[in-house]
Length: 253
Length: 250
Image (tube, rainbow over all chains, first blue to last red):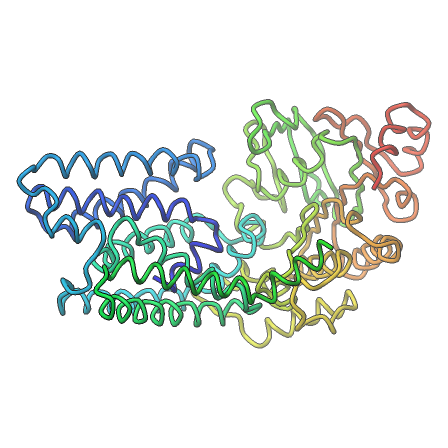
């Protein structure tokens, strides 16, 4: 999450991230309602949202934000419709897991999926790093230099959708985007080297997840919420200590 | 198309992003190899649209654009790899995680190609481009910490790093401190001659015209209303329209 979050934040795809996380949530809700594997339906919805937003925005000549503003509430509406379709499920633990996440319910297979996904994302990022680096700097300039930027932007949107779906069990559909954006936003407060940001962001993500887990165990609180709270506190501390913020304030004076 | 014609626009109309009415209206222009052209015109007259139509960032919805004898519509990527481009008002904010050398090297990424990584020779060519502009000492500096003039020079080095045949510069004299405003026009002329370029400069600044270009095109209301030598263009400045240009000068 921390790794892909760097590209989502830098390419200004945050709104797409929100939509996809809620797409995954809607899909998982459909899975629960229809007694299908929520991971599969979540993945389908998140990927569907991801594959839809970029091309629609390009074809309709609209900013991706406009499309996401429409898709985001639609996914939430669908999620609640799906959950009410199966009243016997109600707010069972399965639904609660989709909503808020439950690290305890994660199986060895889930961990294997996440590890494999991280490795695949690393390899993909290594091979297309220069294109992603140029697009993060400025998409229009990258295009002017002869890079066809669309496939790379769609690739990041798709990868974000997959990563979000596989991480749903950890913090749930309502909180997951915090794990996507907070680590990258935290590290960006300090580093002026994009390669370091890409390395440090997943490490910060891991550290805040583990700290949140221990906090949850210690105080007997929901794991997903604790992870998000720790991650947000770390971001606020980073913002307060940020040399970049201080420089920006000095420049304004 | 004569052998020396490097860019040709035939009855081209283009709509700028987010607009509904065309910014360029049926333009016909041909630029010859080694021309150094200044594109002048009031604000929102279609100058930037013209530049972005030539490198294909804005696709023409009517007419035909030919660059190096190739149709831009079907050869956009290949053509853009041979064009150096500096956009208007480009400024990197303080704190952005990019070194100046990284930014210059990015100019070569299209040429390096998909799944290939930049090699040492690419880095050396990027440094060489910085040396041409006289900013090699800025290579390891963070982009956001550089002044407007320094950033403009880095962007110029980025455009040159790919060893382009065409240089498109959109308002390169804006955001400049007084010293750079004197240096940059001469630098562009020097690079144009040394690097065997065809250079198109969009500007409001008519004062450099006589000394630094061999052709002037005035765009007004999306149409080319004047096309001639700087000397022929001079009388225009007594006209009320060009007084307007002066008024918009940065």
